[in-house]
Image (cartoon, rainbow, N blue to C red; front, top):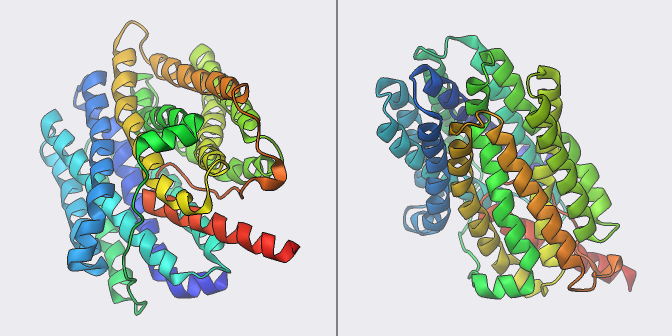
Length: 420
C-alpha cells in the first residue's frame, strides 16, 4: 500500500481533485437547472450527454495518447474541463449545457484512460490490486466530498461553478510536476460484441441494464431531489449516500461472490436494489427512508458492475479476458446514455419524481429475472474454478477494467502455481 502511495501519490491526489470537480458539477447542474426553469426532460438530455461524450472519449483517447503523450493529453483535457465549468452559469441554455456535457464527458473519459494507464505502470504484480482499490476509493471519496462543498455557496450564483473549475486546474499541477515516468501505451484488440454475447449473455444484458441504473443515479439523482422539493443540503447528502453505499458494500459482496454461484448472488443483489427503489417510490416523502434507499441502491448497483465482469470472466479463457473489457464497457455506456433520457421522460409524466424510482425498479427486476433465467440454461462454474472478484466501479473506463482483468488472471495463475 505504501509503495503504491509513494510512487503514485501525485496521480491519486490529482484524480481526487478531478472527481471532486466532476461530482460538484454533476449535482450542481441538476439543482441549477431547476432554478433556471429547465424541464425535467430537458435536464435528462443534458445529463445523458455526459455519457455520450464519455463513451466517445474512451474510444478516441488511445489514439490521442499515442500521438502526443500522456502529459499533454492530461493537461489539455483538464484545461478544457475547467473552461466548460465556467461556461455553464454564463450561458444557462439547454443546447449549450448539452454540448458542454458532451465535451466534459469526453474529457473526463480520456483523462481517466490516461490516469489509469499511468497508475497501472506505477504498480507491479504484488500491489496492482491495492493500486486499483485505492484508485476506486479516491474516485468515490472525491464525489462524496463534492456534495459537502455544494453547501459553501448559493447555487444560483457563480461561486459553486468556480470552485470545481479551480480544483480541476489545481489537479493538473502535482501530476505534471511529478517525476514518475510516463508509460508506453498499448491496448488490447477488443472482442466483437457478437462473440462476447455468445460467451456471456448475462454479462452483456446485465451491463446494459446496469448502465441505465448507474446513469440514473449519477445523472438524475440531483434532478429528482430538486423536483421533489429537497433543499440543497438535503440533495447533497442524498446524492452522497449512493456513493457511501458503494464504498461500504463493495467488498463484502465481493467476498461472498468468490464463495458461491455468482448468478444467484446477482439475483439477490438485484432484488435488494429493487427493494430499495420501491421503498423510496412508495415512501419517498420520508427523507430518512430516502437516504436509506440511496445507500441500498448505490451499495447494490456498484458491486453488480464487478459481479457481471467476474461472471463473464468465469466463461472466458485467460487470453480473452482483457479483450472482453472493451465490449463490456461499451455496452454499459449504451445503457448509460439511455438511462437519464428514459428517467426524465417518466418524471415528466403524471408520475412526477417517483418516475425516477419506477425506472430503477424495473431495471433491477429485469436483471434479477434474467440472471435467474440464465441459471437454468447453463451449469454453474465450480466455485474453485471461478476467477477472483476485483472491485471496479461503473465510472471506470475500459482501461481500468482491462487492468482489473489482467490482475485477476495474474492472481489466479499465482494461486494455481502455489497449489501445485
